[in-house]
Image 1 (tube, rainbow, N blue to C red):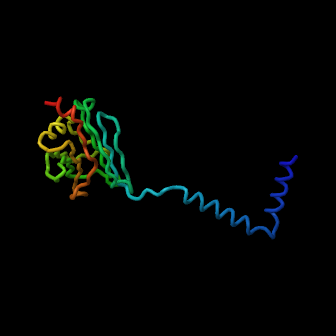
Image 2: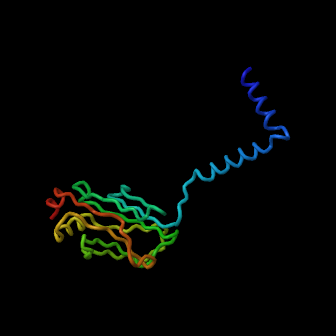
Image 3: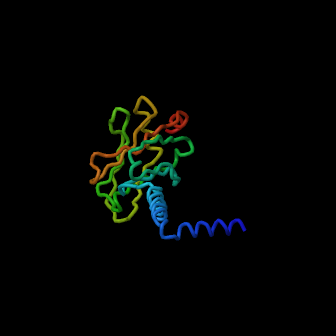
Length: 170
């Protein structure tokens, strides 16, 4: 019974000619709340990094400049790192994955052929990357991506090699 009274009250209040202004205000507020509740994702650029087919890093749009650490351990030593980079829905030409030390010296570079696939994967051997650790003074390296659309390159991740893995790998 009480619910019927409440519904009748609101119906009568909002349906009268004198009270149309509150309806418009409430509708406008609801529309604005709905509109601003979604975060915009600017840009169509992004990347994914996999270790042994497991997604470990993913950044798109405004988060693309965030750099996280990727740890390589004995479980990933015989696998591969796969990078998928997206440029506004197109495949880039002249794609290059580079490993650099903390002094920005190039340790290893992989160049990939131009393809027509929509999500071309770029694969690098984890064993090769761990082997590069012997030529630097610490266990930290940087993973970069570059292409014709991004000639200056972009730092995708900081690679940390665990000491136990570095000692075991020939």
